[in-house]
Amino acid sequence: DDPFARRVLAHAEALFGDGAAADRLLEPLMAAGPNDAGLMYIKGMRHLTAAENDDDWEGQSRIARDWLSRAHRADGNHYQTLYRYAQSLRGEREFVSENTANVMLLANQLAPQVSEITMNAAMLLISRRQYADAEALLRPLAADPHNAGLAQAARQLLQRARRDPPATGESTPQSN
Image: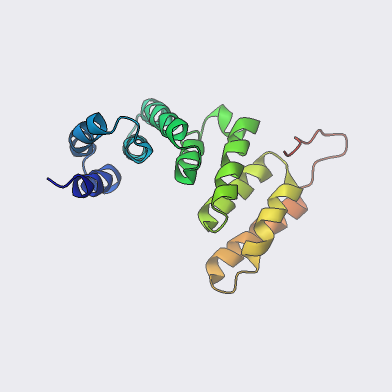
């Protein structure tokens, strides 16, 4: 009956188990703490995980974005919420938008130590043709002596950013 234990179990169910079980666990917790950003984040992750694991990407990712937006309003510095919100837009036209890039870069600014966020932010910037900004994010990762696989992937992305500059006369989205 411990609220923290139920929260942990709900998180595990949301990510690795049964989404309906996560919902059953979250419902009383959210009733007791309606402004709890962590609970809203777990609810968003429940739907993002469902979107990644079934055929209803559009519907489940939309629900995930709604919960992640609520979580962000409750705690604007919760970098995980920002990152997962941007992830929920993958495959959609808005994914390469300036707004999504800003969300991803803010998540990176809040947690520069999380290399997954840095790599994904750099990939998003490359897709937006913001090569110099992507290179600035990738350089430290490419030199990481503690994670050879990550360093190799970052070096490959750096090569791509350096190899694919915008064609002459092409407009390049500006970074912020």
